[in-house]
Image (cartoon, rainbow over all chains, first blue to last red; front, side, top):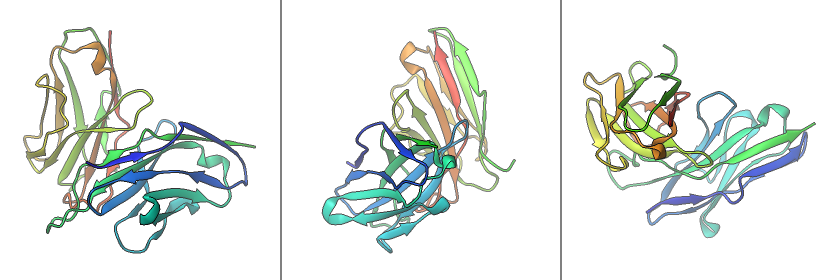
Length: 119
Length: 115
């Protein structure tokens, strides 16, 4: 079974500071990994995804994440936080099945991390 | 519409009542998903449709929950004999062809409160 762990539920940074949101995964098969973001009063939207190509993945709004198999991690980073980054961030995993249809449709999400950016 | 639309946005009901939640996916998206998000938790998979058929309903918690997508577009999640533990935000998402690599487009959710 696949799972992701996001330790803690809330992180607070100052505007301009580094953002680091941690995600560790567990998967018995090579995974696809995702970060989704939920801004206040909006639906979840995809920030970036890893699908076994480049291990360093760049997403929207200056975010990036690096897949590290040895550490079973997919941490999300942004060099300089902006006030507009305040949101809840979810890491998710999907098994990379060896089939003509690619990965599974079923995403398994972590509990989420609420990011607060202080002026 | 441009995005995934879910109605109602809020539903308050009494224990034991029947509830229907509707999802209108992005036009042309063949795959449709229902997730449930309880307070302080991430979204939890309920069911996935490819076209009109349920390709995976393993996340439905029990037989009080049922979902349909009769014409391969709009879907309805039906909950019978609601319980207080069913209170959550029910999320709908759609994607292209359901290849597992694609981006899921989520609606804003339907918040269900069972008193």
